[in-house]
Length: 346
Image (cartoon, rainbow, N blue to C red):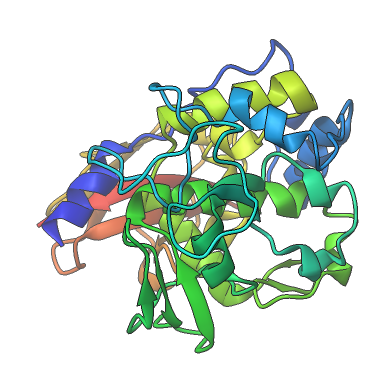
């Protein structure tokens, strides 16, 4: 648990660290909820250039190249360690395979059968990534999830087995911790980029035109525990150079919370006038406001949307009995809502 807390603290605050073109997101600034989703849909759909499925092989040499020139395969790589095998572009392209390490192919992070093999999803670079052929085959069309007891484990530690996460008990595929946030942000991107098509998609990760509840809860955790990496930033920039759109949740990770989870429909502009300290907190959270208005209520949520405290006090909250972890403070004003992120460590 201590390692988990340190990881969360290191990612605070979420900041805009990738480099979109000047003005790229102007139409989305200050928005939240469906208004933000709609604005981002228009931004990342405008100018989108669909690359053919066959040309993905060539594109990967730009978007998925490791610093050593090898293929960046999230199903075999071990960040900070020694991967069990590595691939050279073109030379190790699948073909046939029998074992791990035979060749790399093109993995649809959102299985293509879920959207009926339709374009442009079929070759969208953001979710079609290079992966080991054998591991890709083992993953099959199973959703990403948290495995309870693994029935199969890849050489880098990716797992297949029954779900151990509340809300779903079918078979799932679990990537290693270092890439969980990558795949979560891919799915958040897909929900926005194809919001006009997603209602017809099948698959256990989607429901009623958005993420299913269990998937949303899990991916919010993955998004927090595995923050945006330099790999993702570089890939985002390189995909933009070819496909001419971006993953907004790599550029602005906070937008995930303004669309999904307990902190959607927030007033982003109002938040700059609220100061929460100390962060991380231990005994009490202090609050100051650079404005005359005070909230009618303050609600403390965890990342699954569960309420841990509801306060009428405007300037202090006692958190001494609340478990360590990552939380959201929602400020309910008469005509608006604002939110802050907070870590509690005991």
